[in-house]
Amino acid sequence: MGTTFPQIGNRVVAKVIDTKDKCTIGMQKGDEFELSIHKCGNFCGYFYHNIFNWVAMLQFGGTFPMGDPDVMEWVCPNSKNQVKVQLKRIKV
Image (cartoon, rainbow, N blue to C red; front, top):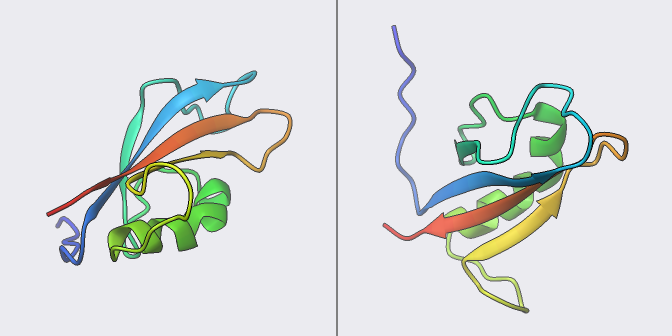
């Protein structure tokens, strides 16, 4: 039985755009994950914890005061095996 996640607000996609060393859970450049306040999928829980509020902001239409309001970049909190992701809002 699959899990159904409600479509609330905009879609948010996290795309791995860079890695330093080897990610401890195996995320690689080019991997994409759909994230929301309900869905973290196979995305790293440690990283998701740090970006949850930004995911919610993008999902519900908030904006960051600088740069592109629909795209943000974040670096993994694991300083040894850093993964950099781009969060992108896809308006629905």
